[in-house]
Length: 190
Image 1 (tube, rainbow, N blue to C red):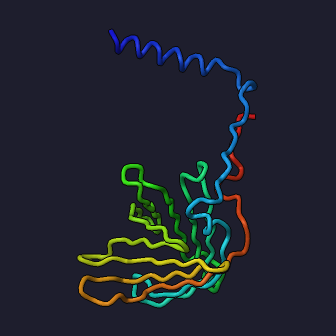
Image 2: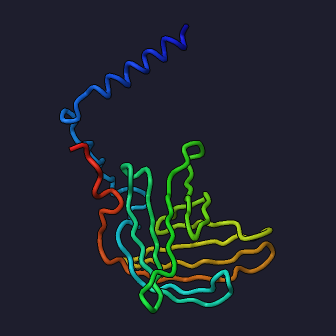
Image 3: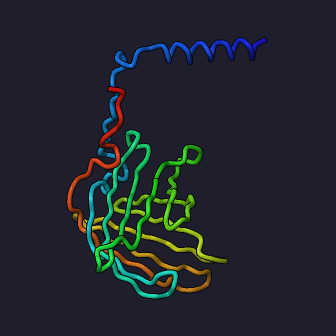
């Protein structure tokens, strides 16, 4: 009996919502981002150089770009990195979605790159961050970033248990400006 009543109430709410003319709906306001956000120092567009050793153990060098912006009023921070080869073609592209974990109050990053994806611990620092991914038995790839005076320095290190870290990646970027990505261009009903 209760299920039937809930189903009827739910159906009535859906019908009422569908019956409301679109012209009466006001566009949803995009919430303002609090610039005291713990990751606000990352927001913007960045350009510079990156180099390292790829999974194929061959060295690489690219012109690296990053764009970083908040979404959902700062609940998420999106980071898109693209590395361009000497020919100007994109040689690398990755997306990270950073958010706080509700249960623990910590942070995590969901990373997408080259058909792979995963969720990993993310630790904001006063002027940067650290995050890592599994890299085989008893090993991790650790990424450490520091932001100082409009510069973003980041290293990637292979860290195997019982061994010294081995640097496999580095990038040096300069902030080139603000961005309204990814919240710009929101779809409205009008």
